[in-house]
Amino acid sequence: MPVDGRTDAYGQIPRGLIKRLLARPDVFAGTVRGIRGIWQRPTRGTRRDGTSGTKGAVGLKLLYMFRPNKAVDKHLDFEQRAVEMVQREGPKAIEAAILKTIRTAR
Image 1 (cartoon, rainbow, N blue to C red):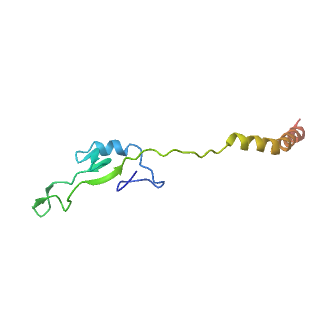
Image 2 (cartoon, rainbow, N blue to C red; image 1 turned 90 degrees about the horizontal axis):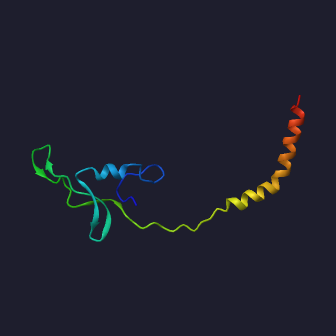
Image 3 (cartoon, rainbow, N blue to C red; image 1 turned 120 degrees about the vertical axis):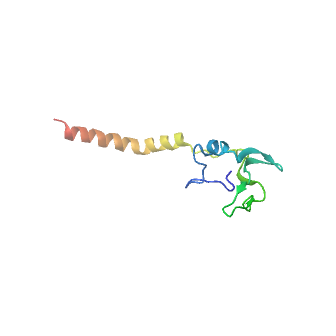
């Protein structure tokens, strides 16, 4: 579940992004204060003006939160829809195909 992380146009996490994130030294997966997810540590080092610090970052940043999968109960019944369509459109389609083969036969 993206919290502050990158997603594509469909709201999904891009392929391989989690593996690339976890390879970084400032990102880790774990539980912080009861929240399981992928966290980013504040960056430490020297600023452009020569001072050191955490660049304004105070604590950990939650990028992605782990949540249990939701059960999906929706069934589309493709088989029933296909049977109904064949019963309704089948005879007309077969007749049209036979007439076409007769017309184009040499």
